[in-house]
Image (tube, rainbow, N blue to C red; front, side):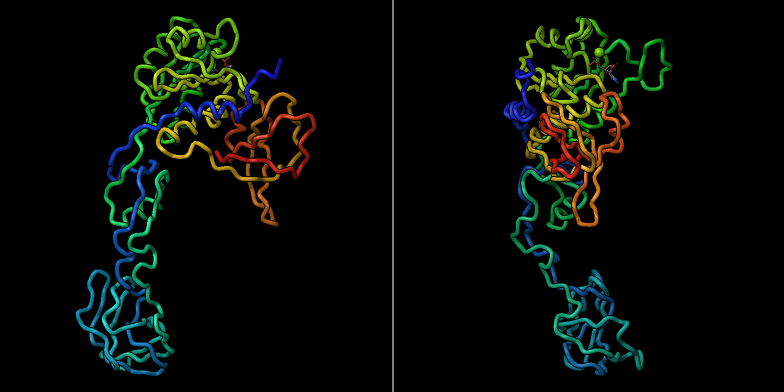
Length: 399
Ligand code: AMP
Ligand code: MG
């Protein structure tokens, strides 16, 4: 009876095969944070572009301590010296200033003294290259400094700008519609009537989608009727590349998501996964639009989004579908489910031996959303008869 449930890996493979990456577009670097590169970025020139000083001090030729040199000029950041250094002379230099011709080292100001305003005495031996940053020390001309598929964080944007870029080619952002179903849902801040709860999934799922690089353009609610569910989903399907639905996907008499999707000609790829939490997860597509029907329990909704929808959103933008994983040791014994793989919310730390330790974040009920707050990742524990002993290796997907 349980054997007909898809494994997490098989379900993910189905999602992966359904993804056709969107196109790419040229965007200003100031809009590129979080976007996925659709080209390799090559440094057209060395970075730094010229040899420069790593210290405030004096540009000199290498030689022994005790020399007194005439100060022939000054090199400041952005203002190279037109003079060159010769035997017997030095040029005052600031951090980041281009090395003057003739100089092959810099002695920092702290190791010098000034017998008079025009001369400097060096109190240390100076080896060639001391305190000099060579041209190309960071990036060589012609080197690929960022690769296609890289997510652009603050450091990557800085690298692109250092390599001369004001624009980059990035994968288009998928548009996401979030539809939260349930008669019990009240909007944020609304007073709760009898039997009502606040709609936390809509904001959480929208946030997860934005974190995955998507544009969330609509968040709607749907009452637990077939007509209302169908109407909300019809609008979402018209507009979005990806529709994320919360709730209404189980087998209760008031679960209308599956019949509504069927009426809207969305083709089911799978329903139900051997996963805890998240068994009722539904996935399908219509034309190019991907549809994720996620269970309404807040933890289940987050876990199934992270396992199925997040990789799809990444892949639509041209990033790898596979999520990076880390191997950790589970801190406490974990009872395993004989029929379902389990996604356990864990916090991660590194112990004295350098081992990554994964500690479950408390009660793992699918309605305990606070267990998600402290979580750094999901430990994927395969189904099995025996409990997992403390110290067993687990694969963790960072959140
Ligand atoms: P369902 O998947 O519709 O059967 O819902 C399962 C559980 O999740 C129920 O306890 C619902 O009240 C709860 N739930 C459904 N939708 C949401 C939502 N948008 N925000 C918070 N909890 C929800
Ligand atoms: Mg419901």
